[in-house]
Length: 259
Image 1 (cartoon, rainbow, N blue to C red):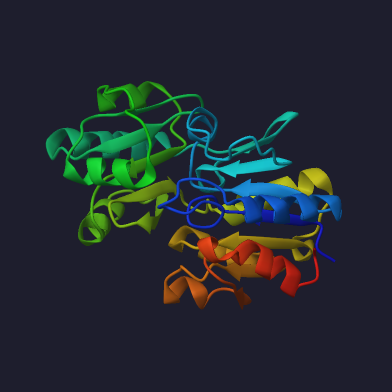
Image 2: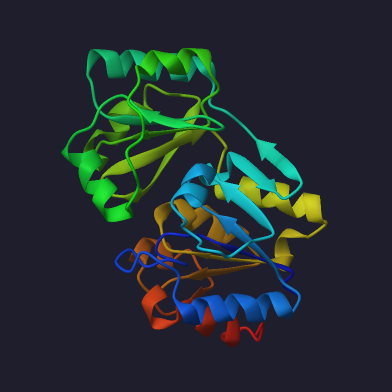
């Protein structure tokens, strides 16, 4: 029996072009909640982006797995959080200072970037996020960093990650990568939320569309991938539904008899 459903945001609840949650998806979420499901978010985004950019509109969820599982909370407060090892942060800062590239540094309650380039601006246009403050990367040496977002292409990803042994990377966009602590993932955050609510892993369903959703899709009791996802992501799911702009969430919930 499914008791909790976890949703990615970009490309799952929201269309990249329309920039909002379709009305038919909103109705499906209301129906799932009325049927007794807990509705949760599982995203690579920061809670600041969710709130300040209105990514979810006026919709409220029971719990939020953010920063790819590194910062999880509900209305009661923080349920789980884990920052990147300071040794790897020190290494990353040194690399950026020697061979500059844009990198978003993500703290608990703020985000900042060291510089901007075409990669950053392209991602900014696609995802419709604002202008983070520009600060020296050395600030990261004095604070807890929960996620790094280096704006580099896939070809440079191995170069960076082999120098950060206590981290792992995932990518859901060609313009940037997400760097989190080794062992961190959306599935770890989901487990923390489930423990808090007394829900077993096999009583969960997860919806996603990006590479950073693969582990979550395999981990959940039922993994549903959107039809707009790449083949690699579709292969990780139990069920492939339609795309976000073709009522994919509703179709999957009806397929499994949840609404």
